[in-house]
Image: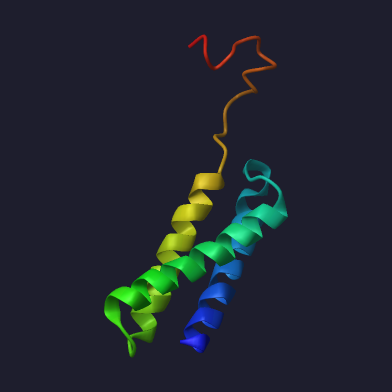
Length: 94
């Protein structure tokens, strides 16, 4: 179980670094992205390991990747043409 946790955290960090490299302009601070990737992967591994039991390393890592990607996708900001505060519109007026 320790190796699954370690591998899932490393996968989460790798996914966070990849997301930061590809979508750096649309993500918040790098520390938040790295922490979200690692924590999401660890949580996904925990949930998958709890559901499947011991002896299923690859599905556990797959669950870690799925949850990490899902949480990282929640951090991505939309790529709009401009900030609504700068354009004079507020989000509540729409």
